[in-house]
Length: 422
Image (cartoon, rainbow, N blue to C red; front, side, top):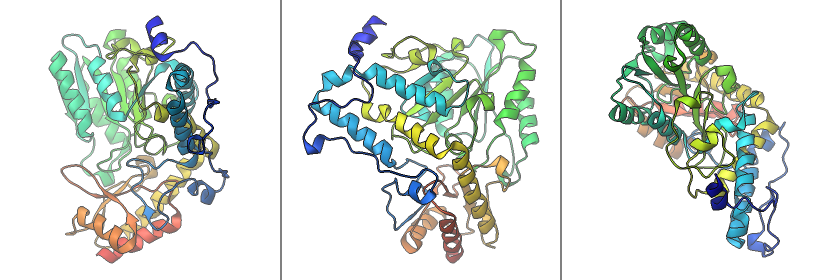
């Protein structure tokens, strides 16, 4: 612990937001966030430097930074460039400020010490799967609908422990997925020694949003008769629900959640977190530089990172808080419903994502008959100035992501553009 303090230079109490007095040149002055009205969606969109000539329905993949985040990154970078050694004396304080902001963003009752700071959702998945303690005979359950990064992390888990990893099919047709059926299917796949259940909150392949709370409640009944070290722990890849759905981790009822902050939260690129309330089941993997001690801090990989981005996570959560997570979720839901309704009215379009807003979030997928999704994406951009994406799976679909940088009017633009492709 003393070594970590020495490495990060926690000796000088300079204040987390301070800018070094030596930063006097114009090119080293920190950029100031533009004033904005968080209650005005036009003003919110004005905080982004996105090309105004495009409708950005693919921005959730790797987010653009809003003005407060850009300014924070510039401020930290300028101070590191001006006097790196002195500014690193604030590293512990700045990291804890980011961790505390993340705890607030994760919802009521979250202790900052439960949070490991990571570079991405995938890093959090890897840390958990590589560190989970399993005893002989225990197994892991996941689903057929998860991200390839999850499967690779679980393959490595099997190679390390010998524990089998099984996959459950939660629905046959995503458009008609049913919450109760999803829970029933998952429960049927659980075995007496299943120790870890790994699911994805919102499937990036189909847009299906799992009923995580109902799954957690089901697991609570399964665990009621189990010993503590045999409990089935629920681990959630939350990246496409986090920042798009109005729910905290304690609302979800899971044991662990990994997410990037550089998607729907529009946080700094290359940042993420791994939250947990059952850290006693996980061994830290990489030496940590974080202080003071605490399970999430000890699980935070040490070394030198892109600190100006990591420390700017604070402003990303403050930006969301100013707008209101509930308002953001409602805005995304409104546009997603409008988009699905519009696409469903086009005869050549097959909607993949459920119409039910309780079983979907911000992702909307569809197929366009014989037109490949890759060609559709290119034509939408070239002919209609609409930015979309393709799902990176064996069965690719055309994918849209309405968010706080898009508008209901642009949703109508997307529907007209898709109809024109037919």
